Length: 210
Length: 210
DNA sequence: GATATTTTTAACTATTTGGTTAATATATGT
DNA sequence: ACATATATTAACCAAATAGTTAAAAATATC
Image 1 (cartoon, rainbow over the protein chains, first blue to last red):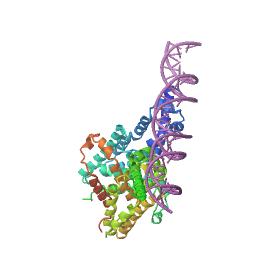
Image 2 (image 1 turned 90 degrees about the vertical axis):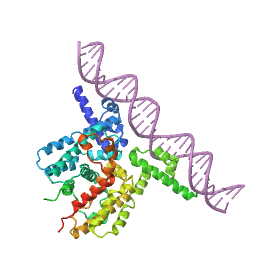
Image 3 (image 1 turned 45 degrees about the horizontal axis):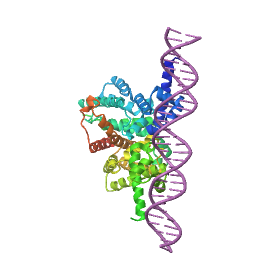
Image 4 (image 1 turned 90 degrees about the horizontal axis):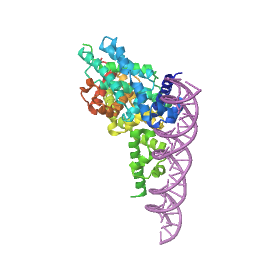
């Protein structure tokens, strides 16, 4: 193994370990010793290869949020109608955790902390995602298909619902039988939940047929 | 001031300080020294009056989540139709941060951590809230007004959107002009956002007029 | 006022934390 | 093979942390 490969490999191991631990316990709760242990490197290697705790966190965030807008944009290209585009947009947002399993947790940590460790580059990534939705809605408005609405709000509804559904699974599991009336409710799979949310949002945005 | 008053006063001060700091930096990030300083008490008083860090956190959580279901239930009592009830439900959920300004942040910390410090009593409070919605939807279904849907999903959409809109304000503020196309979007007040989300959810759930 | 009880405090404690350092090991170039 | 550059490490460090303690102070009781 060459130096370059060794370097890239250990960087990858550190980032992967950091991603898992930061997602699990947040920035303040994460321990550099623990990240080093999980990455199977000496702790000093983290400082040598990447930098201090804050720098490591920013690297991980950048790793996660980059490329999302581009991915969705590519998939939307092949769609014709505004509704089709919106559906692709929503499908991808609502199942983003399949591609980025840790993303919901990171979004939560960041929002909880007021975006304290949220790098500008990730904010740009997010802004691109919302700009995508803006275009779709605008096109839909012009064709009389969608109501005119600030894209930020449906985006928040979709992302909020997605993140909350995914992140609340442990609590739901733990307190499954906590309330008699709720125990009888049919259990939905994550895919079902995503599909239902998609339909609700489409219905909410659509104008009645002329 | 009697002993009882002094005790109650110092407990209140500790809980208020703890609420603020836990909301701001989460459980792991909070420092008992800091909480004591903000509460203007000696740190040992926290352990004497309330208990250790975990116990303090649970007390604060219980303080916040208790009574929400009851409050909404009371307001719903005076409504007639399922739609009126649903509107009251949504209005209260979407403006809950006015009554409990720290609640969005606590929800985020708890979800981010997988509910690790979420006491059962607070889960029961939440379950009661969702059971309320279940009743409203059930009544609406029976009267042919609403679609039949698991109440958990619209609840997640409402709460998710509310929490995300409120909690993302610092980030939005900070990165206001990050993307040219988005800079021109009309800025909504929190009340506007809540009203729009309410309308979208009502529209999504309503069945067409017969 | 004397005594008992409770509250409060400053100092303390053992452990942990993020980060550093100098020595050692390995890789590269000649 | 040797010199130089780079990578890796065990040990170290100062500061911080949650929690504790025993004495002092305050309050309650008779």
